[in-house]
Image 1 (cartoon, rainbow, N blue to C red):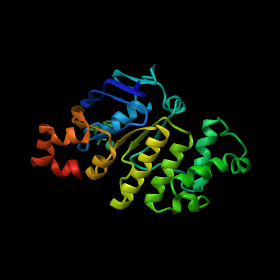
Image 2: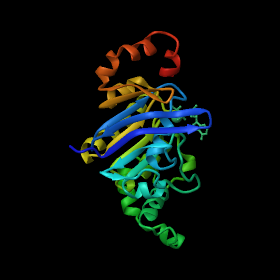
Image 3: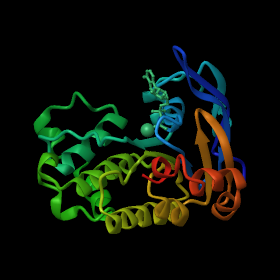
Image 4: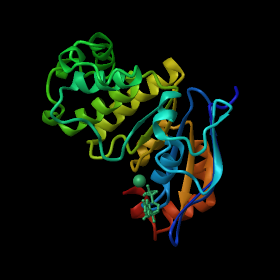
Amino acid sequence: MSPLLVAEGLVKRFGPVLAVDGVSFSLAPGERLAIIGPNGAGKSTCFNLIGGQLRPDRGRVILDGRDVTGWPASRIWRLGVGRTFQIARTFHSMTVAENVQMALLSLHRRTRALLPRANRLWREDALAVLAQVGLLDAADRPCGELAYGDVKRAELAIALATSPRLLLMDEPTAGMAPAERHALMELVSELATGRGIAILFTEHDMDVVFRHADRILVMAQGRTLAMGTPSEVREDPEVRAIYLGGGMRREMVL
Ligand code: ADP
Ligand code: MG
């Protein structure tokens, strides 16, 4: 299958810090790739380079055969790249359904629709997505009132509403209890398989990573330390040294 996403030799420097230093990978439709590594390894920067929040100093981002390097985030989003952030971003005073409707309105360029009408526009579609993530009951509650795990699910619904082909998820389960984490990733995995959505995610919980990733990219100090299937990565001597050999272990597993 031809890749949906190709990241080719990405480099990003912040002053003296080489945040991302020659990272390459590809992602097939429906594939789940986890990026792991200690804090500061360059994971979030990779997401921002692919999502268009940052422009790489070198390297290319190819989406569906098209070079989108340096394109603004909104244009990349319109090509079918949804994302969730390390710190959830929702409009707290708006209801859960309205948050999802906003994404749909924005995709269809109707953000200037009169607010009372915006209330109704895309509501059915929004409710359908909320049902998928198990948030239908909370549709008319302000996002600000939700428990944290539900905010993360609302954020997933917002990302899914626009039918992305690629989902970028930066620590989607951060702050969740272990059981909740698996439930969310289970849901994401079903979507990946069922709809062929490719998933790029980071995650500190190694249980979640090894259970829900098809392939794992291990980063350290901006570089690729290892890449392969979960069992390949588990057996990699360098990764084992880092995970099992002391020094960085606590940071990696966090
Ligand atoms: P991770 O997500 O793996 O924890 P990041 O990609 O956030 O790592 O950060 C990689 C490195 O780049 C870190 O040293 C971090 O301090 C630095 N960095 C990230 N974003 C910025 C920024 N906007 N300005 C300056 N330095 C940054
Ligand atoms: Mg990060």
